[in-house]
Length: 126
Image (cartoon, rainbow, N blue to C red; front, side, top):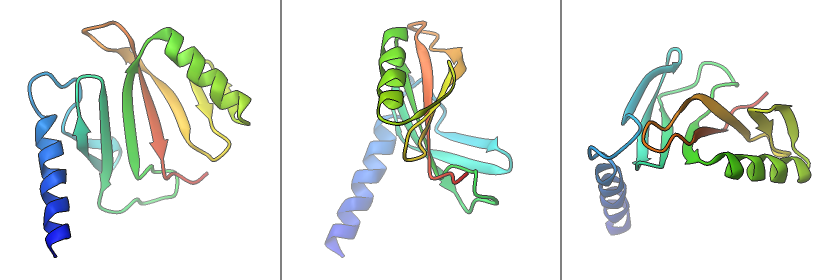
């Protein structure tokens, strides 16, 4: 019981830590994949992690989404690494790893740095 309470306090503290005015991402995203909602469990100016609230209605809905701000060079290196490890190039902004993790560039850029925003989708089954 003590471990459960400690875990809840840590999770609450982590999410509260990232919810200051310096965060880039919203704490809750409604209808990201309509009608599915996500809440941030980690949120900083350069990274955010979201988990699905409730149940998915079909298998392509990710159960968690990670957003990361990265430079063009970091994206090219990540894309190359995923492909060299057996992944698939869908297009220049979208690669799928061998184990089915999707890496997708957003059309939006970080307003502070001008860097790319890359999303990683976990838990969707094609």
